[in-house]
Image (tube, rainbow, N blue to C red; front, side, top):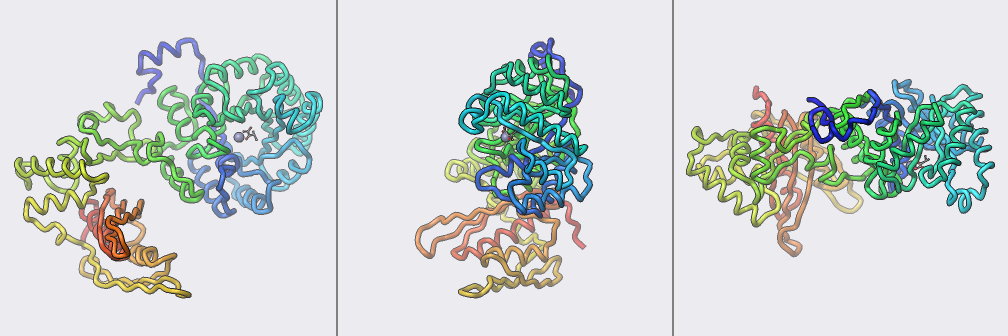
Amino acid sequence: MKPYSEDNEIIKRAMENISLPDKVAIFDTTLRDGEQTPGVSLTPEEKVEIAVNLNNLGVDVIEAGFPISSQGEREAIKRITSLNMDAEICALARAVKKDIDVAIDCDVDSIHTFIATSPLHRKYKLKMDKEEIIKKAVEAVEYIKDHGITVEFSGEDATRTELQYLIEVYRAVEEAGADRINVPDTVGVMIPKAMEYLIKKIREEISLPISVHCHNDFGLAVANSLGAIEGGAQQIHCTINGLGERAGNAALEEVELSLKMIYGINTNIKTEKLTEISNLVSKLTGIKCQVNKAVVGENAFAHESGIHAHGVLAHALTYEPIPPEIVGQRRKIILGKHTGSHAIESKLKDLGFKVGENLTEEQFKEIVNRIKDMGDKEKRITDNDVIAIVEDLTKRTLKSERVVNLEQIAVMTGNKVIPTASVVLTIDNERYIASKVGVGPVDAAIKAIQSIIGEKIKLKEYHINAITGGTDALAEVIIKLEGYGREVTVKAANEDIVRASVEAIIEGVNRVMIMGNYNKK
Ligand code: KIV
Ligand code: ZN
């Protein structure tokens, strides 16, 4: 697919006088600025897991952490450097000897050293004058270079610094031997035009490669990073899911897709791994992405309105500017009150029903009416809602078409007892037994089922709602499962939340297997 800058007349004309690089380097700071997200703290094992995935994703630099901050941080960075990855492993250090020494001790490939340059930081934080700051910056760079290590230097709060003074600082570190300079928009106050202007100005005076580090306080981090590229920057600092201090940093997945699909600029990123790493980072940090998050959000490729669903089913590009598989996602047609008949027809086909084959026109019309009716009343229509409608109309019992059946379940919970569940399942009429412990009875039951079903089916979402009041409330469990090339959403209700959960899982497992490419023995 051609980038939009070649295919779209308006972008093409707007870009006429802008010279762009062929390639941009991605400096990932998920493990440093990303970990500064309020409430996030990763164990060394978690940091290593993310680093391995970042390396596989193809980032050029991994900022693995800020080693002076803790013993655990140093341990994590050392473990990451010991893995000899392709990516450059970098550590952050203030422009002070003790920070630099601990970074050197972690055996990193490069050190990102910084000192604030803006009048606000000089006066209130550092209590240093302009000359002192230049002296500290130069000493830090020289000290790192004396140890034969690559240096990236940042003037913190660069975008609120007097332009001539900022250039003076960068010139001094260039002379001191820095390898790259970074321009942080520390509190995200820039706009893309200003970022472009600033980078152009710096480029007129400094010949080192320029990197940018944009924060998202006004929601402009990605746009400002791209503005910097238009001004001649060669590297972008970013984080998975846009994590970072306050409103975060530029989101790697958004930067990457804009570079690749709009500007036509290459990076080393393997875009098909983006959703997987986004999910991993959400899981390990506990920070979920909003559903409408660009590129990796749950709804980024979901279509509900009849007009949109019809459009994408006719030609994907009508409402999908990014092919979902490019980023490891897939299209979702959501059924609800805005759904049109094309989307319902495609969902039915997915579930194994075809108008004119096993469904009549009349039945199809009735299914459409009932789904729209449900959409008016309910928030979410699941696959088993559609199946229930089809069963009712065709008098066919699809639930009997099963691969997996629950024979028995027993759960044990209480004071001073580790919640434990034992399940007996049959798969293709063969009996399987498993027992597992969990944080609660539902967790234990799901783990026991999962241990029999195996890794091929994954639980992607689990929600529980009380649909009536009181201690005998009916619990409604909605789950999403993925496996055998399919994704299904299933709902079950019961007064007992363990039963509701187990019923939903078993139903979902059957749907995934029957609709997917599971081969019965
Ligand atoms: O936002 C910032 O200024 C930083 C510096 C450490 C570069 O994260
Ligand atoms: Zn930052």
